[in-house]
Image (cartoon, rainbow, N blue to C red):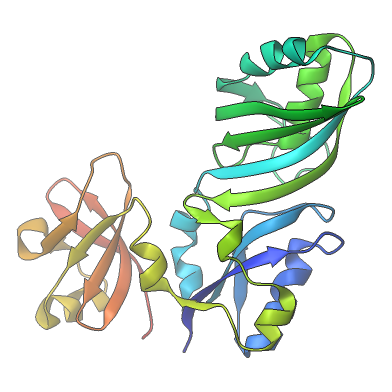
Length: 257
């Protein structure tokens, strides 16, 4: 049974769902899902979880993203002016999701870590954005245009990183069809800022049966109170995704391995 992921360079022109189906069929997985939708005309890093690895989605869905794109401004502006207004969107912002989005249209807060202007060619402006998961870049560009008083829309967008996973690490659809790019969940988990604990075989048996465990019975490798989820390992690798609450480790999703 698969407990693996693929870092795909999704091409523009297909939906994220279609990309998942192509990958699933190419590698012979029974089920697959993606962590963070890319619009049909947006390319770049798309994390695809195969079979059991889908149980890690609560962690994978909340990873920060980075993009490079081109926006078109509707009247001439100096670069310094655009940079000035772009800087006002760095920090916590409020966004109303687009009408065509799959989430409820209520104002929500998101954090933009960086918003840089990389270059200009006429009214086409190349930009870089690093932001919290769930930030709508198209809406960000629209709001920037409104704030500048000239209007703006996004022409092109490419996701160049998800958390620490960069576009240079991705594989193409053709690579996947050749059996390349399949990564163990454990290799990805090592690079995530997620709690990690190790248990012996006796405790592992209890975890696999959904039993809560006192935290003093496990070996903590990495822990922060800011993190909700914890990867639980035994000698075979990751066996569950859990939550530490008070002094107990509560299994949330058990991997069938």
